[in-house]
Image (cartoon, rainbow, N blue to C red; front, side):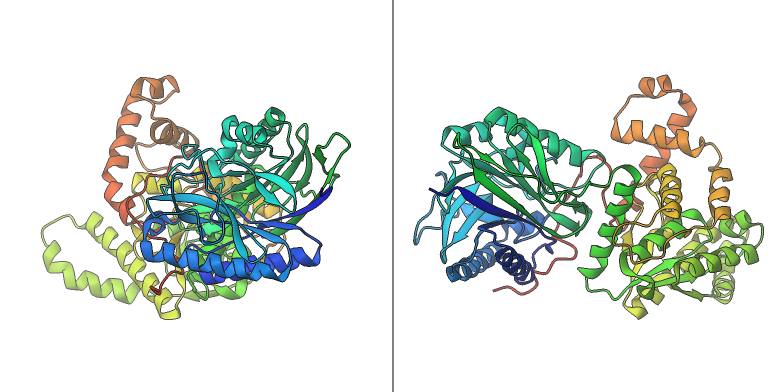
Amino acid sequence: MTDRLSIALAQINPAAGNLAANADRLRAARAEAAARGADLVVCPAVGLSGAPLLDLAAFPAFLDAVEATVQALAEDTADGGPALLVGAPWRGNSGRGDSGPGDLGRDGSKRHNAALLLDGGTIAAVRFQAVTDSGEVGGPEEDCFDSGPMPGPVNVRGVRIGLLIGGDLTTGDVAETLAESGAELLVAMLASPFAPGRADERVQAAVARVVESGLPLAVVNLIGGQDERVFDGGSFALAPGGRLVAQAPLFAEHLLLTRWERGDDDGWDSSEAETIAPAEGTEALYGALVLGLHDAVTKSGAPGVAVGLTGGLDSALVAAIAVDALGPERVLAVRAPLPGSPEAEFAGALADSLDDAAEIVELLGCRLDNVALAPLLKAADSLLAPAFAGREPAVAVDRMHSRLRAATMAALAERMGALLLSSVDRTDRLLGLAPEEMGCGYAVLADVPKTAVLELARWRNGNQPAASRGPAGLVVPDRVLTRRMKAETPAGLPPAEALDDLLAALIDGGLAPAGLMARGHAAETVAAVWQLVVQAEAGRRRAPPGPQVSRRPAARLRRFPIAGGFTDLP
């Protein structure tokens, strides 16, 4: 009988669809774990394939490639090293998921979120996620997996381990079934994305399972940015009674080693191991934005990013996040002001706005290019003057100038091979106040309300994030913050705080007009905001992706991963 077991939780950052690169990450994690004496290495749910896969999860050629990659990983475990628990999409039957030689636990009729135990050169066992309707605590549901049967434990080096996959953590039924089937330890494999407070929810769900089952529990979660998702990691382990004995950081790859011993009562316990307190509040939100941007760039293969600096707060914050994520050498700031534009007026003069951009660049250490748009705009105005004859052209001309600037920025970024970043926040995107987003590749603040932008900038000025590639200290000039606090919203709209409250209640909360007016919003304001939101829908559908960092539900159409690596059909 085995009395000791070392379990390594491999908190990895896979790229959706890039099976070869992801398998190499797992091999590297297993090698490190073997050097540290681990008996078992556990990767997150869908750690081999990455997430979200969207319709790639149902693509037969991709699932064939997943099986071939799993088989190759299984053969690696013939070296006598630690066993490997791999998460991947898997075609399965209606049985329990047990497998033996020649039986991969599948017949192609269903598609599951699976955990595969690789040991001794073979696929030793297969288990399927039983609970798929679980919100986001266990993982995203966009990949539409079929529910599997209630599982039994798997045998690892003589220890019966019960596996909770994704949403299985959110209900007591699966853990109870595992305990009744003889499980001695529980292991949860998650792909749970970031949202405010979600890390605490995962811990609370895990504590509930430990208390209910009487069994200890190790939880490993995916990290990394993919499309609109940011998976935040934060893997941890709980001893009997719910005592926290190990904790990995948020937003970073990490191998968390936990050591377990069988006690006199035949139960398993663990002494205190590595514990890193997770980031919270504004710090966690900033970390999610940095990770989302970093992976959007690196997983797409772009050498860097271009940021249009306006002298305003949004673009200054985006530039700071970009430098923190990528380093100043991979960030190009571009100043291309429109004559008479709001950013120039806020500064009092165009020269002052240029000075703000120059100071931001000096603080961040990145490069600044200035683009003179006046000749281009003059030529366009002259070309279209006959069409505007006898009409009031002001609105059309302003929109044309904004689009020409956007096209110029996009062309500059494309010439460099860089990803052009939008600096539009969630408030302006919802209201359709962001025509310059066209041509951008990624919108860092797409899910960040205007009021939170100010909080993030203040926090960053006083703190340097973990693993930051940017400078310590001030990154956004004080006068830029002051201008934002004094800035007025467009005519007919309330101040930023009230506007964000109204949008949150209307869009996220789904409140009826009576409920909105009970919160202090005037009927005419509610009507005006709703009209703007509806009119902006077409523009939002053309807008670039950005990291989802709120708790709003994700509405998706049929898609494939944006920065995926599954490009060659087998």
